[in-house]
View 1 (tube, rainbow, N blue to C red):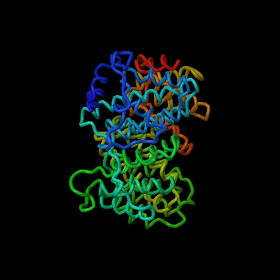
View 2: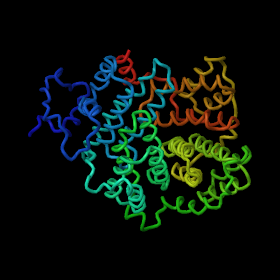
View 3: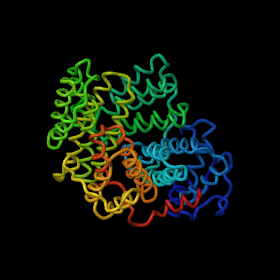
View 4: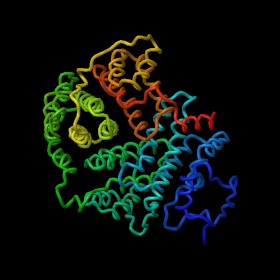
Length: 500
């Protein structure tokens, strides 16, 4: 059967023409039932969602906001839109490298978290932004080879009682085909928490893709909590394929730099005292950790974690150091490696909080500590700007006007804005006002996935940091957050018009 337009050409034309393409509205012929069928070797989704996913896949970018807005007004649910976003992404966008165009999938949970924390009037803004982001990535994927997730090889799927062992063996051997089949078997037989325990370890085992593997584990698991675990199989297959991304020959047969922290930490984890979860908070230990990771190595960071835990320092004080070291790196050298220090710490901490396995939690903490100097190395040429030496500065305006002054200065002088933020942030009310304005400015002026990933991580982790350290972390975030200067994006105006 011939199609009037190939799938790749349809996506390409949609991206180029923007709003110039449509369906019947723009003169294209109706799509027959036969034409609407997926190729037999492509993965299919639950029948209740397949038509909505196909709608998202086939609607031109220039019409997708308006199309989904009209359907939401007609009763389409929030959960259905998020599900379509995630599933369309895992079917249409190759998760290698784990980043770049694949951010359309990674950012679904970030948009969802931003939506949950927003006022009712803003709740749809991040989700509709993500719809447009998917269409952009879909077009890029089409240009780069038009990857589509294949159907699972059913004859290779192990029986349920063998699926876990098969998955572990395949992942340990970096075997793509066997991992894919075992993942399908696990998704059909294991519970959500059992799956998370497995995947969060493999997401943290190497430093390839600057933390995106750990980010994908946390974000996909959290997104599945929203859309339902009945949709987990294709998501987990995409995730497993992403986690096996590597350079060169099989990592199981060599000693690659990206794998060294994990291998070393497997031995270090055995040295931690049994009562390590019962320590006491220690701000001095946090400051000492910050001092170490400013110039020290991954090995230095790991050794210090062992020393602190074994002398009774609480894990939260180490996490305070990891978070604030990431915030400091954003101050010292704003850029892609620095913001991924933030988002990776967020993902690893989420896994640490969620896991129920003692050894896994030790490894997640050690890996987060070891990754911190690696991000510093990736950033390169960082300034000497310690977060614990950041000075405070008063705003000239009171109350809500002070927040407006801070974000106006974000567009003029980020250092001044950071100092003013630190002077302003005193308690819950001030933090709430600051966070609400930061989030809304992302909705109105954010232009890429990093804006959403970074802001969702920072604004969430503020609550996970000890009071003595959290305000400095939040103040440092203005080095990447959006300021109030400049016009709102055309996309944000288009979304507000469509859903208004």
